[in-house]
Image (cartoon, rainbow, N blue to C red; front, side, top):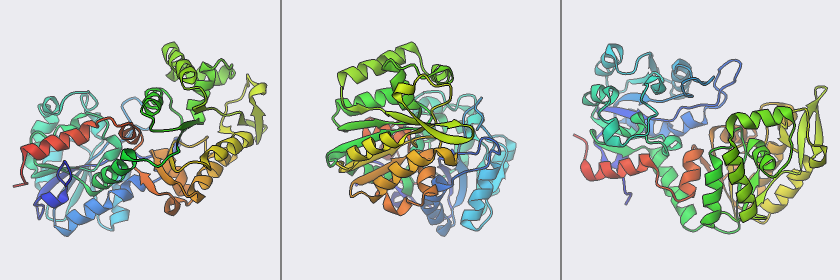
Length: 411
């Protein structure tokens, strides 16, 4: 029996249900078009089950964060979901004003609406308890209009934010099918992972993974850590390499001296466990060129890992029984720099290891390479997945557990 309620525990026929989903999609930076709809597809089992029960569905989601380039309204998201479902999903350019309230109270059985980007709320991302969030105007205005709150946003389960946990103290609450599946599958893996276990981190962010790597190594969850992308560049800088003016400027934008010191200590404390690239892909005269550590500093951005690193990393991965991938190995959107991601991901897909993939851009790369059927578990989570694998408690899941104790069943 799950520690939180699932759809099986709720009376949902013709009820008004709020579903918090994670539709924070990878976007094309120039066109702002959605690049990959995997996260949306993974919520379809929950939505379709509710449609079968003629529920009145209100979707709540976010995209980007205030001030970021991908912070946009969710109109295109509603259109994409309409295409997937083969029925209208009406976009409401409001969150809890009169327009949103009228749209909710006017719902007929089987109707679906998507409210606007919840991160328009000034207090959405504040780290507060569920009880504190429940007192906000957003929750107080909307909760009387609903019968049940369903959380199917595993990718955001590590965040104690208003729309994620604020409804749980005031409404009967449960996990959606995606959340239920993620927790069941990942729990089995972390309780008894088959060794050796190798984690690969890549992508375009690095500040959040420092503590993740430390915890994973402390708890002996992973035997080896492979770093690519910006995390690799950051650790190389911490290890004393001068990457060049452009690369250093990119790293200094996100990282602090204290963080680089933490990385240096990690490399020293866990010598041999953290593996860094030995060569890179750069662009020169419109073509791919590979350079080694001896060629640093470099005037060009380091956009990918090189052939030697791919060989070294696949050798390590060949010994693994469990493999965790979070982040592409380079700027895979550019065909010149797809090599690292393609060769590493294809190697993992062909291996006999239990493979776990998480994070929006990681999943987008897997999809682009048509490897979905060859990965053991594709998680919608990035940060949530990493923290879950570290054994940390996730605020959303904890809130659902408390909600199970507080509410017996939906009205």
